[in-house]
Image (tube, rainbow, N blue to C red; front, side, top):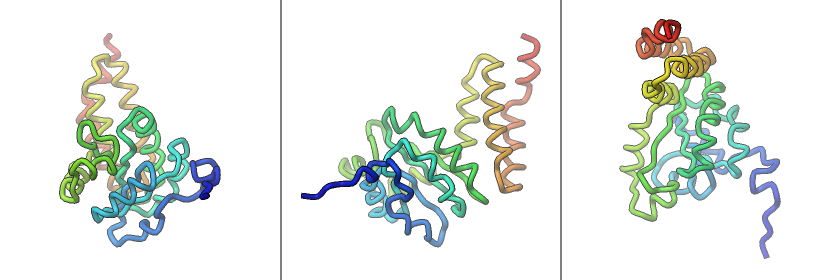
Length: 193
């Protein structure tokens, strides 16, 4: 009988499933929840690693330091989505010259493995990744829907903190300009109310 050690379920594990994928030529990788999802993405030609226990996902952020693009593809359920932004921020902080992208699985699909079982293809997966927003772009877009100016200022602070942690001066400059445009006039409105 095969017995899995306690460590397999994310407690005390200091490795990700399929870590050799970090050494791909493009320095692009998908980070997903579980070995089976990583295997599915690899079948589609997408280099992928899987975390063996969602509670420890953010602790692996330093392993992504040399990647140019990290596609964070946690499960499309409450547990996965509750860790998405926290994990994305932790990885973004570690990247030297890269960005975190947050792809969206099709509606009703929990993870890549379920998607392949329901007809997902390599072409559809590649399209999903190419259309994925960066962490900063996603947060900026979400903040536009916030009605209360004070809450928008808090959202802006969160985004500015992420930008300040970028290690790439070009990206820092680029996003600083984009955020200035997106939040133009917000501080003035908040102080008047």
